[in-house]
Structures are given as structure tokens and as C-alpha cells.
Length: 196
Ligand SMILES: NC(=O)c1ccc[n+]([C@@H]2O[C@H](COP(=O)([O-])OP(=O)(O)OC[C@H]3O[C@@H](n4cnc5c(N)ncnc54)[C@H](O)[C@@H]3O)[C@@H](O)[C@H]2O)c1
Ligand SMILES: [Zn+2]
Figure 1: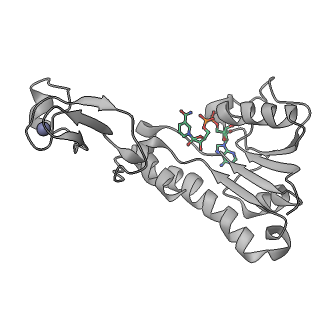
Figure 2: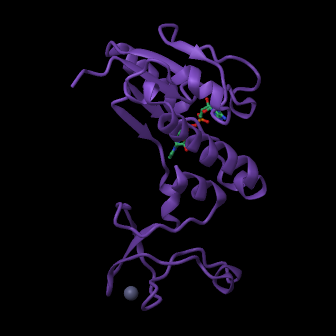
């Protein structure tokens, strides 16, 4: 199998993406970035930390034509472009689902429809989010590992913000989440990241 030399990083002007670009450049990869410099993140200006060794396609993942330009002649894709506000997603559901879910679907559709682009691509890495695991994982002294549901309104009205065991109602201790945890999408952002 041929090795990976050219990598497309979507969202490569963002927090995780720009560090990913720096590391790839340092390791000798040719890097292209697809990023629309989302005004909410970049305040209508090009960030001064953009790696000058990378090639920049300033375009939108919602736009198929921009994917076509960005995917040309790359060997791998690290897809990080997304809008990332949990609270904001609840009052802008169309914007979040369009960018994160449809934007990602656009990439797959272009790859499905264009064998000449698909054939060169060896790897696609897509960022999901731990928000898809909702309230998270906990340990109960009596019941071991538990996955509590949403805290109830009556509980929160008593100003009890802690999480209780779903079996015995005792307080539980948070632990790290593993991929065995059932999915629990509690926001539009989480839904859009579950899709991706
Ligand atoms: N930061 C975290 O803690 C975290 C945790 C879990 C998952 N993630 C995921 O990692 C990825 C990167 O997150 P981040 O924290 O670096 O976010 P960020 O906002 O710093 O970077 C996202 C980048 O994507 C770009 N972008 C937004 N909409 C776009 C569009 N329509 N077309 C092209 N580019 C667009 C923005 O301009 C920005 O540069 C996202 O997919 C996010 O869901 C982040
Ligand atoms: Zn218990």
C-alpha cells in the first residue's frame, strides 16, 4: 500500500485543527486546510497562527464544490470542521445540523460519487464528541458502574445538582466514559456529532 503524504485537515484554522496542522507539517506531510473562518470563532479575520507551510482552501463544508476542491489529490482526511456550541445548538438546530451533519454527509457523498477522488484516499478520521454520552458514567457503592438518566426537575428544584444511582438513588462518583456506554444525545450538538 502506498504511504500517506498529503493530508486534508478540515477546520484546520481552529483550536484542535491548527495544532494538528502544525504537527503534520513538522512530521513532513503536505497539508491542505479547508476552513471557512467561521466569524463566530475567528471574528472576521485570518488568525495569525496559521501555518505558512500548509495550503489553504477558504471554503465551506456545506458547499459540495468546496469539498471537490479540497479533496483533490489528497491521501487522507482529518475532518474537524464543525460548529461547536452545545447551548447555542438548542436555539439554532438547523444551522448545527446543516453544518455538522450535512457538511459531513457532503464529504461522504463526494467520495461515493467520485471514484477518481476516492481511489487515492487511504484514511478518513472524523471527530465526534463525548457529548453523545450525555450524563456520563458513574460508580455506585452498591451497584458498581451505572449510567444515570437526566436529573429530574423535582431534584433540581431542591437545588440538588448531584447525580444519583438509577437503582438505589444514592449519590454516585463520576468515572471516565468508555465506548461501551450507551449513547444519550441530550443536545442538538450531540445529535449532530452522533451523525458524524
Ligand atoms: N474542543 C473540544 O473540547 C472538542 C471536544 C470534542 C470534539 N471536538 C470536535 O473537534 C473538532 C474541532 O473542535 P475545535 O475545538 O478545534 O473547534 P474550533 O471552533 O476551534 O474549530 C473549528 C474550525 O472549523 C471551522 N468551521 C466551522 N464551520 C465550518 C464550515 N461550515 N466549513 C468549513 N470550516 C468550518 C471554523 O472556522 C474553525 O476554524 C470539532 O469537530 C468538534 O466537534 C472538540
Ligand atoms: Zn446504586
